Image 1 (cartoon, rainbow, N blue to C red):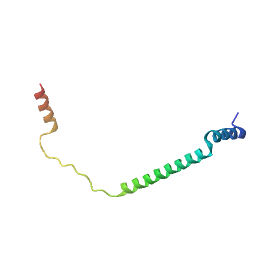
Image 2: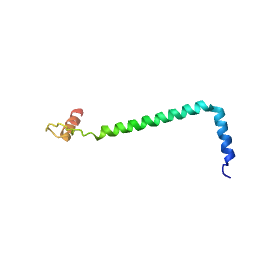
Image 3: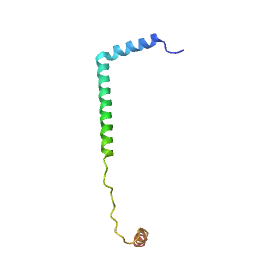
Length: 78
């Protein structure tokens, strides 16, 4: 028991009567604008990520190890 052609046509007529031709075409236009905007955003993201960036460095000053600082903090808390 599949859906026949007549059932699809009846559903289509009901949808057109409920929403009207104008609303359906407006909805399709909005969907097309959304797709175009998404593609444009993806293209901009690709061009931004393909530009080489200078490597980031972290400046670190040699000092006491982190474990020693934690031990001092625990002894002060006691």
